[in-house]
Image (cartoon, rainbow, N blue to C red; front, side):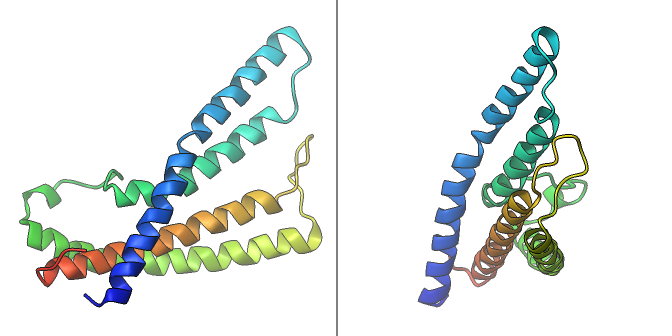
Length: 168
């Protein structure tokens, strides 16, 4: 594989590894939010912000950790046939199916970017008692989708190299 593609794959995977390792700790943030929610409902006045903030933390955890999960090959996969195939057949199938993932992520990023732009332009707020601004979570979602798109291309390049008998 050309040096530029090898550099791309290594750079994207290093960035996603760092982001994914940080994203793992968002679960602790979410647990703290839910713990505070339980305490405030029991001993004080219920907090208005806890449910949505826990949802925002889960979105951040899921979207920022997704590319790292894909990199580690620890995502959910239908294994009815996949595990019975040879490694070469699996690589061919991965090359074929990742094209659909890339197309989906491009469309998702396009929609997410237009939604984030709208949220920034008009100061969109959630329809709840707390009424948080939606732009930060929509921008974070776009960042997560973009990182997943970069990782999908890195996986495609890695699979093509494997088919050629090379390793990146």
